[in-house]
Structure formats: C-alpha cells, structure tokens
Length: 185
Image (tube, rainbow, N blue to C red; front, side, top):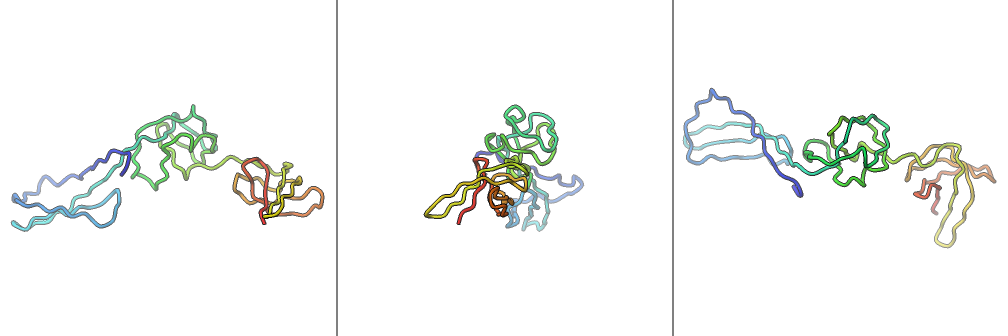
C-alpha cells in the first residue's frame, strides 16, 4: 500500500466461545494478498484453533462522481470531485488524478460518491462514419497525405476502414490524435 491509509476489519468472534487464555497466540495469514481473507488464530498450550474473517482496506484520495452520472456522460471537472475510496475494494483501475478522467466517456452509470475506475472509461469518438479525414501514409523514407472518407466511427487508437476519395480503394487505418487517420508501413 502506498499513499493510502491501511485499515483492517476483523470479523466478529462468537461470544458463546469460552476459550482458555493463551500466553502465546499465533496469527497465520494465507499466502495470497487479497482484501478478504481468513486468519488462523491458534494456541499450542492450551491447544485451540480459531478462524476469523479479515477485510483489508487501503483508503486513498481518489476521483469520485460529484453527482449521479448516467452512462455515456462526457466527464468534465465539474462532474468530478475528490474523496476517499478503498483501493482494494474492486478490480483495480482506481483513478487518482482527475486529468485521467476528464474528456473521457463514462460507459456505466454511477451514483454520487462512487469512485471512477479506468475500466469504466473510454475515449470519445473522434472520427465519425462519413466524415472526410486526412489520411497519412508513412514509411521510414516518405510521408504521403491525402483525403479519405471514414466508413466507421472510431476513437483514438482504433483501427477503422476508410475509403480513399480519389482511388475509391478501402484501407484499414488507425485513428490519430489529430483527428485524422494514419497507416504506417
């Protein structure tokens, strides 16, 4: 855990148990590193063993939804705030810098206060089907630029089909950050 505050919730022990006092209690944790685990609590003299559920938390300052957000919302600074989130609660991808979320599209709906996770976000569509785009073909020795028509919608980094406006040939090109498409040889 880094930049967080660790916390351990120990499950309740049945109050009806009457175990004799132990001078040397041993606590054994499983070898896996999980947020939910079972600790083995044991004593050699007198001899007894107890299994107790443990829940680990790593509380960090994270980016959270400032209000209820429906799916397909384009995230802006006004829709985001900071709050405490458990880095061990989900599948990972907790966003801690608002710049990682701003301008991206939220795939799922979130309630106010829910943390923003990287896997919930996608880039906005930057090239739309039917749009004229600049097609850049590059190899180590030269660069050729021409216009093409996008035959698919695409986000930066997506491979889409485009049609060269002069030759009418279709090509597979990668959507570039500048709003065009590119093919590298």
